[in-house]
Amino acid sequence: MKIATYNVNGINGRLPVLLRWLAETQPDVACLQELKAPDEKFPLEAINNAGYHAIWHGQKSWNGVAILAKNEIKELRKGLPGDEEDLQSRYIEAMVDDVVIGCLYLPNGNPAPGAKLDYKMAWMERLSKHTQKLLSFDLPTVICGDFNVIPTDFDVYKPERWVDDALFRTEVKDAFHNLIAQGWTDALRKLYPEDKIYTFWDYFRNAYGRDAGLRIDHFLLNDQLLERLKSGGVDRQVRGWEKTSDHGPVWIELS
Image (tube, rainbow, N blue to C red; front, top):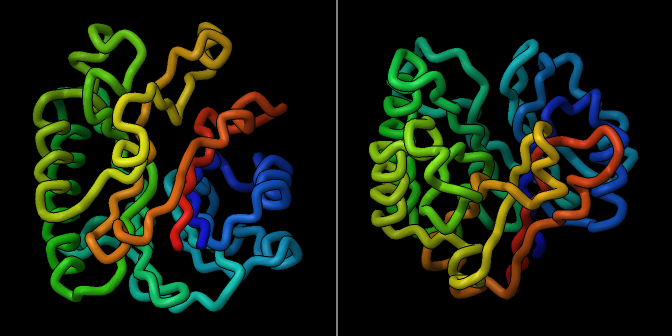
């Protein structure tokens, strides 16, 4: 079972890139972030024609998450619990082939400090409560997506430039590591403890060409899924395609 996560940075504008990537790499499940489209503008026909079922949680102009799967998708929830007034479309959860899959687009938090960082920290607190509950169900579970968190100095080109950024602030990293400490494993770091891995390259200053990137797209696995982890990686080449997202797709393969 191959599960991928990909911040598409606008599903309709990047649809040719998305469809090409799906055709070339054939993930069983693809979790998408930053759809930037309301529900009614989701390109379901094109996704179906590519061989995928889909569930999605859209929002006009911003945010938006989706789960695509070759097999049946059983939707479990739309939206992260804990704040009924939060209308941002950032979380969707489903079961595919007896695996619970949470797809998230965590708030960026910039400019920091300020209201956006406060929202990010509150969102991470709600996420922590929900992931703790997911662990209690004792089912194979993965939480994946664009976390907007650079976990360590090793995960960013020139970390000294990011000290005050909301992706790299101490309280954000601490919240991420506290989340993992519940009983989750960072799949890519488990597979490649010593390798430089980036999943995002800015559009500016030839970041991709210079490989000046960040690792902010993550897979967190519970113990039941960790024992099935075989391989993983970043489809880095997709970032070099025409009219592509600033993220590269990330994937894991399970036995």
